[in-house]
Length: 312
Ligand code: HEM
Image 1 (cartoon, protein in one colour):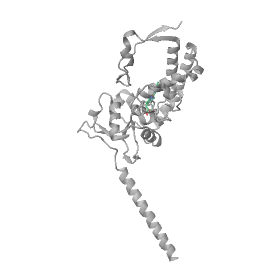
Image 2 (image 1 turned 30 degrees about the vertical axis):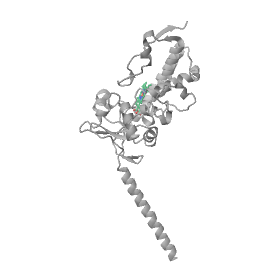
Image 3 (image 1 turned 180 degrees about the vertical axis):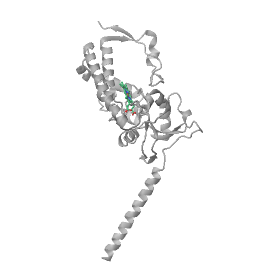
Image 4 (image 1 turned 90 degrees about the horizontal axis):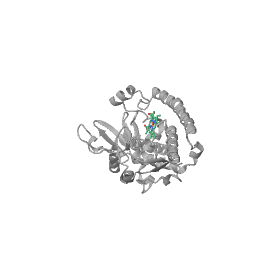
């Protein structure tokens, strides 16, 4: 009997000690912030962003890792640059990171910050988003469908079979996402991400451009435009596959994905089907130069001139 009591006491002491150490380690881990490149007074790391922030951040992430903290002036920003880290933020902790940072620019340009795209996470945003999806976009999609049916010689059934056309659109969005850093997110509570402590109120930037070019996912030819890679792959841009997130993922995903996909496919299919296309003789260099120009969204620095002629 005495032996049993001693054994029980011993087991509970071991158990309590393990619990204590686990708690201590978790506390130590949660106090560790993600790595940061050295910063300058006042401007922080702003000088390292350059003309193409998505490229500079991708370069920095190779040294500091898929989760790093940069300072935009005095504001700490968590930069997310890998498939796994994006999944952690946009899926595992989706609710925590579903808010938006507020800024004077958003206030001035986006209806006092009340536009659905920049509204903080909460009841107002929820209502705006459901209105947006249910009414505006479904109505617009119907409009596109009826209008396309009347004017187009490519039907929706035809589109289902145009596997290569869909692959071209996917490959374009992989290498050239119009919003390479998505729209900034903000955390609303403290969270531990891959052993790093992320305080509530942290601004988050997700580098969809870097993720779309990750060699570990896309192979050694990740930088090449090769639509064929999508023909036998189930990876899609609808927010389930974190390898391809030009529309974001999780609660803040672009509500217009279906609308934009249908529109892109119809327009491209009809342009190719109804017209013959050729390049002006002198434009060979421009044709291959896909340099980016920075604006609200990324676009070509050198416009592509092409000559259309009737197929009849
Ligand atoms: C190819 C076309 C498009 C692309 C690549 C795109 C991409 C995106 C991205 C990356 C986001 C932010 C996702 C995030 O924060 O994680 C977004 C949000 C949003 N997009 Fe789009 N978008 C496109 C077209 C459109 C169109 C045509 C509309 C409207 C008709 C639209 C309406 C919105 C709205 C309202 C949000 C904010 C959602 C929220 O904050 O809850 N988008 N889009």
